[in-house]
Every structure is written in C-alpha cells, then in structure tokens.
Image 1 (spheres, rainbow, N blue to C red):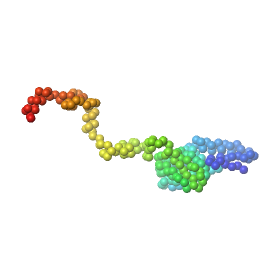
Image 2: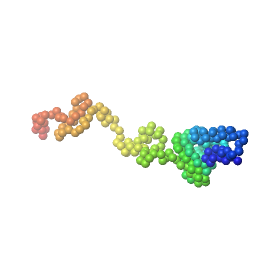
Image 3: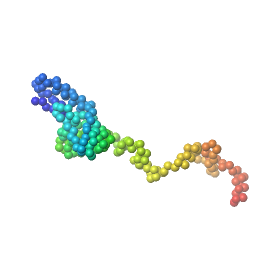
Image 4: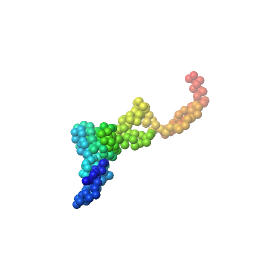
Amino acid sequence: MATYTTNGGITKIATGDESGTWGNTTNLNFDILDRLTNGVGSITLSGTTHTLTTSDGALSDGQYRVLVLSGSPSGTNTITVAPNDSQKFYVVKNNSGQSAVFSQGSGANVTVANGNTAFIYCDGAGSGAAVVDLTATIPATGSLLAANNLSDVANAGTSRTNLGVAVGSDVLAYDANLQAFVTALTLPTSDGTSGQALVTNGSGTISFGSAGISTGKAIAMAIVFG
C-alpha cells in the first residue's frame, strides 16, 4: 500500500505496488515536485476564509511555492494551511484587495497586508502549529526596517513624517526667498577679519572686505554725525 510524504503529498510507491500504473504515479510525483520547488499559483479568495490544502497523491493549491492572492474577498481573509502537520515555506504576494491572515493551528499567525509581499513558513506542529513571517526578521540588527509600502516615498509629506523630519515641527519651514538668495549668490566659505563687512562685486559673489568707506571718511562722518 502506497504512503505519502508529510509535507508535499508525494506518493511513496511500495515494493510491488502500482503494477501497470507506476509511470503515471511517477509523472504525477514529478508534477507535484515542480509545484513544490518552483510553482507559482494564483489563489482566488472570496468571503473571509480560505483553506490552502495539500492533498496526498494529487495536485493541490497548497503545493505551490509562490502564492499570488487575488479575487474579491469581502474583508480580511483568514487562510488556513492544511493539514496542520505539514511544514511549508511560501512566498506570498497579496493582490486581493484585503489583508490575508495565514494560520495553521492555535499558534502564531501572520498577516500580509494588501499590496505587500512576505516570506512565511508553517512549522507543521499539529494543533498548536504556528506561522512565522521571515520577512520581518531578514535585516540585521541596526538596519532600516520599513513598516509601510515603498509607495509612501512618492508622497513627500508622508516620507518626511515617517523619517521624523516633518516641516514646521522637526525642521524649519522652507523659505523660497532664502533659497533664491542662496541660488543667486556665491557666499564665502570662511570668516573674514575683525571690522570687515560682507560686500558684493555686483556679479553675484559675496566676500568679506571693506564696505567702501575710508578711514578718513569714517572719522569725518563720526565728527559730523557723532
């Protein structure tokens, strides 16, 4: 009597079994292996629940390596991976329009938000089985983790807020006049000497130097104007 692999449902042909049909069973096993290693499956969701099943000796949607979620679920959809003693590794791309919660037993679940991609595995621990999100732990300690979609980068205000540099609270507001001033003029890169002033050459270059009043004129002005 044939038995099956725990994680993939591949038929294990016993000695003397499958007389006359051995080739058919072997070809089916190859198809299952193809799904387990490289298969990309579109999983159409509806309502709020779905069962992702791996069937013994048959092609089934739980055997795909990559799961592309689609359909029109009516809300957050809970996807139960069955059987609960089957260890699985999935790459999930959620295009369903709703969040998808992956569950296998009473252990931890993983939520993949709409538009997100995640690497997850199911530990196959039976009734207490858990699902783990590897995506959340891939970066090393100290690396930058993104809690939101990269599409947030397209919105300048959202990006500044997420980075903690919101205009008006974390950084000074942008001033168009100041920007125009800096753009139009070439400023000095070092300090001048005592008594010097900022002067322009009339062509956009600012430097430290005499303001154009001679010492004699300065004395005369001091006498006249006090």
